[in-house]
Length: 178
Image (cartoon, rainbow, N blue to C red; front, side, top):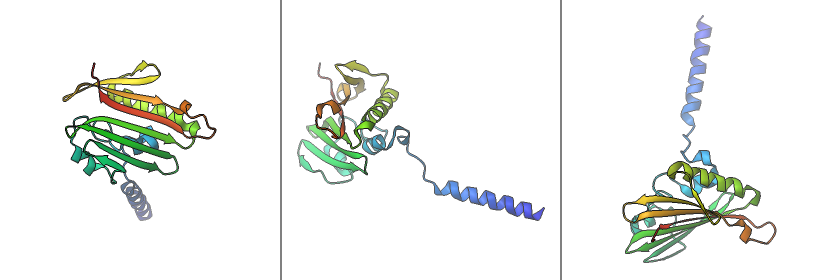
């Protein structure tokens, strides 16, 4: 009886230590490593930011210094392990974020459709089903500062004609000025 108790307690402690040592997955992990790396956060419209955010907030929150910058522009480049690279450009008007553009390059071009579908699924779940505008998946969302904001997602891989080029996905977030 004592042996069974010791074994049961040992198993319990082993399981407890295994579960306590594993770090919790982010909410973005279910959409794959590319989306998780690019989006960084499920807050805001993109990477935890929303249109109207301050220039200083974005510059302080991004993990590296910008590759290019001026008073109305910040540009960053990142690597996603062996999966690819991406860039993010933030445009500002009067020190407030007015536009976000990101190009994501997938090293294994056969994975581009999967990555695109993960982004589409993510945006569909957050903003409702997209509309199709000339090959772009487009979501219209409300912003306190800008009213209607558009999120455009596109697979631009067909623009590359050289064999073995990476796949390319583009995201563009901007105020709808109509």
